[in-house]
Image (cartoon, rainbow, N blue to C red; front, side, top):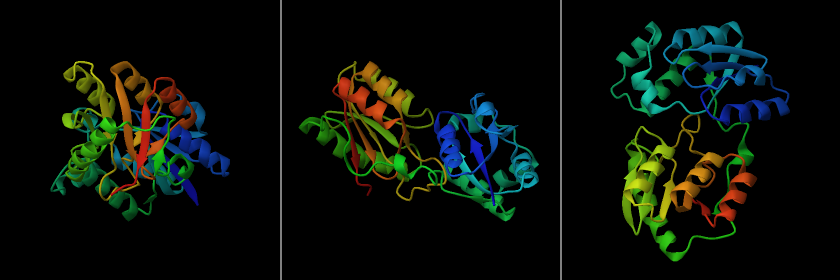
Length: 269
């Protein structure tokens, strides 16, 4: 059995490669031209660069390499799907058959096409279970009463927008929703919310979808998010336990503790 990796941007693909290598697995990488970091060339033995719309080429490449199991890892910005994609014939046919073109529908359809070709899309966390935190406070400081109320309120709003596949994060202050995430991603959301809140303390809430498909679009938190929270006076972060990848946990927690930021992993609902 041979494994493949569809690599987007960020550190996630490198973590998957390292974890797979530690288990004696040498993965074939299909790096998305519009997203993947060039450093992926030196992180894997076999790398093929494929455009975001080249579904046919992706399938042909994996078949030629004998790949039958694939992991998707790394972000593909939602706006890329609408602004940068040049679909090949295979993808044109797939898009024509979709009633809705949101992220779940699109990637779910890609997964079905891959499986029809004998390529099974695995959970993106298959090699990374230790990076999924259990419920509880992850930092030295627990949320204060005001932040706890904001988290409870924010999780209600975030679950609703996640259910509608709009976004998975919200920013809250004093139990008022300052901003919700759409295609721009969590970091842009936090910057926008900080401006709207006049740089007053804010709370960030990120959830998984009600029926989160762990094969793709898994929530991810890493050091850049905490660095941005420091810059924007975001004092608390709530994530879903067991459904959110926490990358560089020791560094994340250390930086949060140094700036009195509270991080809590909540039981998913």
